[in-house]
Length: 113
Image (cartoon, rainbow, N blue to C red):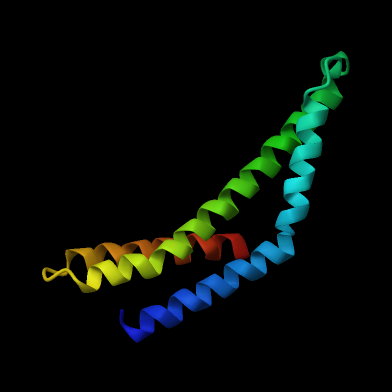
């Protein structure tokens, strides 16, 4: 794997780690558990306004968790993609790996804003 890819992957991994810390992923996961319990209360819809607030917040929290986990998997898979690409003679796998790297960098950059 080319040295510049290793460094770029390390940089985006560090950036994602910082984002995970700022968003406090363990706290989000605990909040999701609490909200799931609140959403499961049988009389939740007796107060539609409260029910809407709980389910909306649960949806947002779950979406954030899923996005962070997906990005972490993508970052963790990048070294393997480049390693496999290095063994391919035609360069198409390298092009695919570079595309995934660019896409992952963009997705992480969008979270930083």
